[in-house]
Image 1 (cartoon, helix red, strand yellow):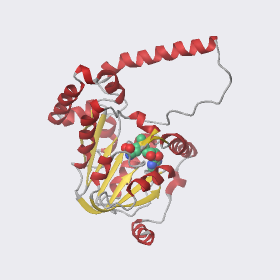
Image 2 (cartoon, rainbow, N blue to C red):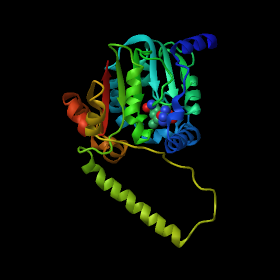
Image 3 (spheres, rainbow, N blue to C red):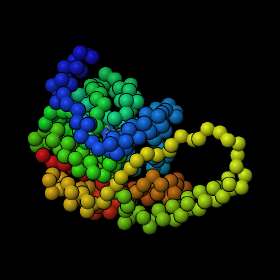
Length: 308
Ligand SMILES: C[S@@+](CC[C@H](N)C(=O)[O-])C[C@H]1O[C@@H](n2cnc3c(N)ncnc32)[C@H](O)[C@@H]1O
């Protein structure tokens, strides 16, 4: 199996590594992101659950909505092909992710975090239902693959970790390695959402106040000196829909839909099992299905389809 993977990757690879083209600040950003995911984000905190899962709502009340949002990605991809690229794969956190590459011979997972790829390898190993796993440490803005190498491409929640100057380049790279008449799906968060900002404002205010009070209290009675807690987040840079139209859709043919309108912060604050949470989310999903473009532009998480 190892030999086969080697031969396959040789056919895909350009044999180059463009990382040296980055400025030193860009490299520092990427190193910091990698370090965060290696040391914090992809550390397991429970059976198959990573520290990073606190950015997701895993409660039963939201499960159906979250599951259906995940499945939206697959609807825009070719159901079968030879190579499937998952750019910024992480450890393939959710079972729905394997559905996208079910009809492919191989799923190529790319990530700058080696820990992510080791976890991904453990998860899919030699399973055939998500395609044979191949694992490459690389940068999504400098993919080491030949043009048109892939029949299907996804990049989920990854481009926002790049320095702003490289977002357009990352889109171009995903497009370059995509085969003719094929589609790629990118999911990324917008920096804000006209639909949810109104609801999220009081939550942010509450958090800020809590933090201020805690800081004041700890100044009054500082605890014993001890090790500093590890970082809880890393570099993120987000845009809005006009950026995408101005900077990307001029060069690449794309369509914009909704992946999910609301944030996890919103879900945890407003969606509860005894307050009709499941029902509310069903209505929200219905609205998203009815007005996918509007909700994609004005909600929090767009689903961007690149068409070649
Ligand atoms: C928020 S996680 C998302 C992982 C996965 N796509 C998902 O949706 O669960 C972002 C992932 O992108 C990876 N990443 C960040 N910057 C990257 C880069 N420049 N090139 C490749 N991967 C990168 C991180 O290591 C991390 O595994």
